[in-house]
Image (cartoon, rainbow, N blue to C red; front, side):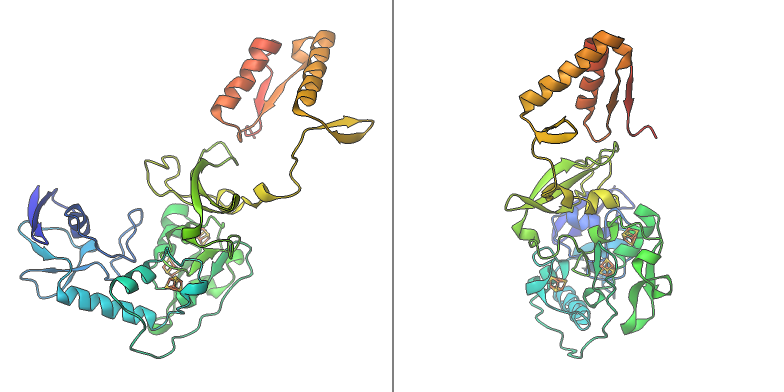
Length: 353
Ligand code: SF4
Ligand code: SF4
Ligand code: SF4
C-alpha cells in the first residue's frame, strides 16, 4: 500500500492504482470524458487533470499511477481554469442544441459546462460540419456533437470486436468514420449499439427512441432480455406506460451476464411490444377460421386435445417444444408437465439449432 494526500485527506491505495481511482476513493468528484471503466485507457480528453505539489504540469489522473507521498489538489484554480479551456475547445466545434437533443439531462459535456459555467466557446468560430449518415435504421450519428473521446471506437473493438469505426483526418477536422468513410451498414458494424452505450454526449443516439422522451422523463425498469437464452439484463425505458427505449445497466452486480453489452435485438428490437398487431386474447381455430376465446376456454380446449391424443396413441405421441425466451423456471415446469403429468421424455427446445 502507498499513502497520498488528496484535497487534504490522507488515503491508502495499493501500489499501481491510478490517481483517478485514488481521488475517487478520497471522495473527489473528478470529471471525465474519454475514461470508461470497461475500456482501455486513452488519456486524451484531459478533463481529469489534477495538480500535484512539486510537479510542473497538471497530471491526467486516469493514466497517472498514484505515488507514495503525493499531495494532490483536484479542484485548484489552475485545474479549474484548464478544464474550462478544454470545454471551450470542445464547444468550438459542437452543435449546441440541448433543448432538442436526445441526451439532454444525461450528457457529460452539458453537465461539465454547467459545473464550470462555460456558456459558449470564446473561440467563436463555427466548427466544421460533418456529413450526417442516417441510412441505417438504428443509430443516429451526429458528429457535429462529437467530442472525440474515442470511447465508441474502443467499445466497438474491445467489447464487440467488430472494429467498424476509427478516427479519420486530423486536427480540427478529425472525426469518427467507417473505412473509406462509407455507410455504417456497409461496414463490419453489427448494430449492437455498444458505441451508443458508451458515448457520453448526444453524438450517437437511438433512432428508434428519438423524440419519445428525454432521459429524465423515462422510468427505468430493470429486466432480462427475452430474445435468447443468454439472459442479458437491461433497463426498459418507460414513458406513459409505453416502452420507448432500452438502456444498458453497466454495473457488473446488476448485469453479471453481459455487463451492459447487448446485441442488436436486445438494444433495438423492442418496438414489437407496443405493436397493435399483437394478440391480446387466445384464438381457437374453427372450420379453418380463428375466433377469439377466453383463457379458460382455450386451456380446456388444448388440455382436451392433448388428453385425446394420449388416450388414442399413448404419451409418446406427444412432445413439448419449449423456448429459450422463457425463464429457467418456466422451462423446468414445461419438462415437468411432460415427464410427470403426460408421461413422456419428448422435450426439446428451440435454441438447440
Ligand atoms: S450533446 Fe450534450 S451538450 Fe451537446 S447538444 Fe446534446 S445535450 Fe447539449
Ligand atoms: S453498433 Fe456495434 S458494431 Fe456498430 S459501430 Fe457501434 S459498437 Fe461497432
Ligand atoms: S461519437 Fe461519442 S463516443 Fe464516439 S468519439 Fe464522439 S463523443 Fe466519443
